[in-house]
Amino acid sequence: MEDSNADPASAAAASPPEDFSGNAYGPSLLAEGASPFRRELPEPDVWILTSGGLRIPAHSGILASVSPVLENIIDQPRKHRSSERVIPILGVPCDAVSAFVGFLYSSRCTEDQMEKYGIHLLALSHVYLVPQLKQRCTRALIRRLTAESVVDVLQLARLFDAPDLYLKCLKLVHAHFKSVEATEGWKFLQNYDPWLELEILRFMDEAELRKKNRRRNKEDQSLYLELGEAMECLDHICTEGCTSVGPCDAEPARKKEPCGKFAICHGIQLSIKHFATCEKRVGGGCSRCKRMWQLLRLHSSICDQPDSCRVPLCRQFKLRMHQEKRKADARWKLLAKKLISAKVLSSLSQPKRKRAGEPREEVSERGIRSMRLSPIASH
Image (cartoon, rainbow, N blue to C red; front, side, top):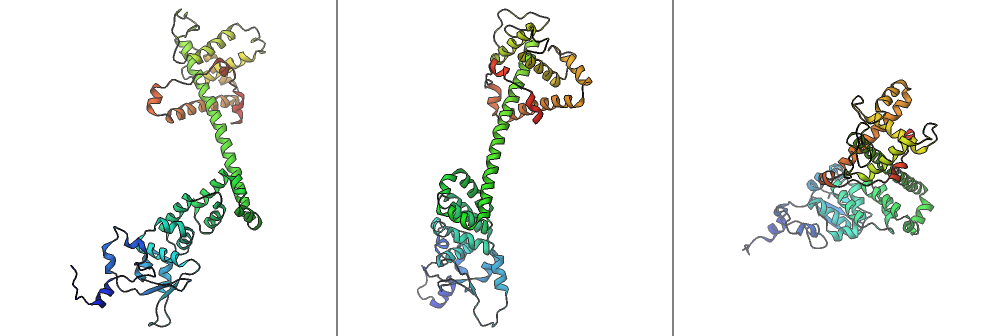
């Protein structure tokens, strides 16, 4: 129990000065878990003056340790040593200044304070170089972004150098441009800040271009994976044999069970049968035979054992590549490299259990027929 005869003056000196709300630098310092040493603070030696004339007592040592700007202000010499040291923080509501000072003491802000004064606290954190508060304000403002307010927040994010908030605003404008375009903020932007409007439109164009490039790369990746599957099936057919086609020096078993990639193997087998019997192939007039020819040449570009390889024409293509120009050879090497890269990336992007047990995507004969090697020259 406290001593009832304690000196009132000494008790007042031991307690921190109270602000206009009756709490010591705002409610955040009175939250559960606040440091017990806060009651041992000395007498305040500096006053924060707000636009409404409110004077908030503070300690120069604490302010200087958190904000280098306030440290420079405090270190400036006074005209008279006896005069009070007053730091004016003007242009924002009194409660926002109180919340700002409370954060300097406790590194805390309530959700209610962020809801009401998030923009003001962002401005103060920028002006007085308090990065922890700026990060907190950025996260809070991002959670509260709407199509109606995003243009205003975007302008302030640029003004107060908040890149994360700025980028999030740009992404929201891009995602909901129709709604944003109908707001008063966008109309104001068009009339008074055309450079920012141009920057937003440029960001949207670049985002659309990136989206198209990702889609195209995904399609190319899918094509390379299909070609890789076809290479594996071709090697499997010519080495082990499948249901109807096998190695050139052995007959396939009559009741051979379909392999795990039969959908692809079946299309390859049909193409091999056609290639072997087509009459137009000699004159170069069969497009289906041309694709089979390209498939065999691609295999030769990837194969590293031409002497023992059982795929037809593999050794002949290897010899021919050495005799051809370097540009043609480089083109096939580039395609082979892309096939290997696509296979590795696909394997790394799948979970372990998928790599081991998941059946591969089926590709019909029609899908194999549609493979074309000519577009690789543009890559």
